[in-house]
Length: 113
Image 1 (cartoon, rainbow, N blue to C red):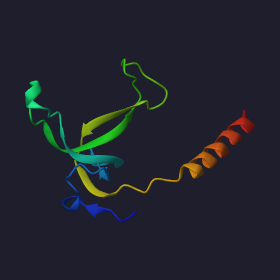
Image 2 (image 1 turned 90 degrees about the vertical axis):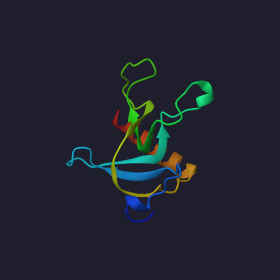
Image 3 (image 1 turned 180 degrees about the horizontal axis):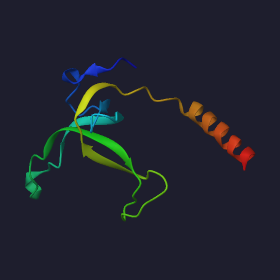
């Protein structure tokens, strides 16, 4: 993974990247995002061709499909954001390594129960 880079160098072709944004100038949020046409559709289907074109972040949502709260993030919510810097997404970890880590965590939880 590289260093944080200025937004003027970020890809604008729909590539998912990590961004940093500060919605209130105080709290820093790091999240996956992409430059995209949010809300645009196919005019042949009666949809407008363009919606909001810009940076769209992805965040976990604790509401299920019916709008009820859930204990864990169960859906992904998109929202318009104004990032200050970006970097490429990290490489995906090996599945075997993730399973080992999960097994270690589960064993520790059983010991403490």
